[in-house]
Image (cartoon, rainbow, N blue to C red; front, top):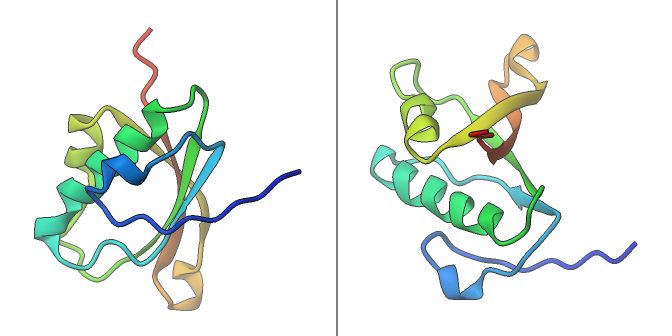
Length: 101
């Protein structure tokens, strides 16, 4: 198994390469950046059929959510792991392209 790591900031589309798994962490702080982050994830997932993004997300506010943006960008999030029960409010999601067929 070959593993490669590459740092890419959101909206740096030219640096993206096809990948099986995209690891994303510590991305969602400021609400104004949420759309750019999810747009970048969407673009990266389109580069390779069946690719997934594993993203950690720390809940910082009960009034902020990415649900509407996931719908807008036709992305689906599935909860893989959560530390909410231990008081840390961190969730790991698997994000993929929404199946439109």
